[in-house]
Length: 158
Image (cartoon, rainbow, N blue to C red; front, top):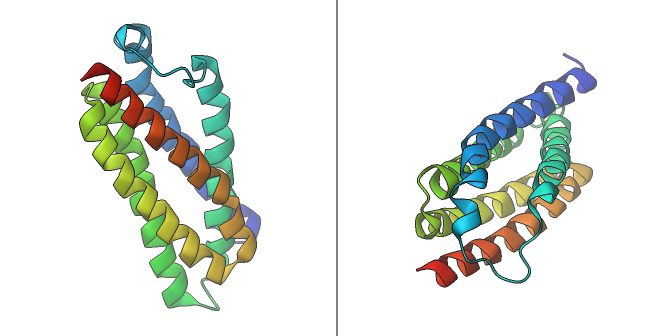
């Protein structure tokens, strides 16, 4: 499989994960989420879909670039992609915990683990392909913001 095909496979995988995460979110956005007290810096709901689409696309490109190095650095690439898969699973789990279970506290604990896994994935990716690592920086920054937002929502609604 060539580089473009690898990138496309991972981008589509990330977008599918995002789509299914969004399914859990949709009903709660219309019913439960509006009832919560939110901090003043809470973004409007419409911003989340385009931001996440961009982030999932960048994540997929990053993982595809790393996957493309499998022939040259099999162990490092395999290890990096395992971390990538774990953080992607944790990403989906957060939506279920926050919106599906309506549990900001549990989601807040989980998002810290997610942030650590993204950071470790970044560290592994940047050693294999610098551009791949750099493509994860906006994701890391967004999840940093989401962590503060999650904690604030939990605090205001406890």
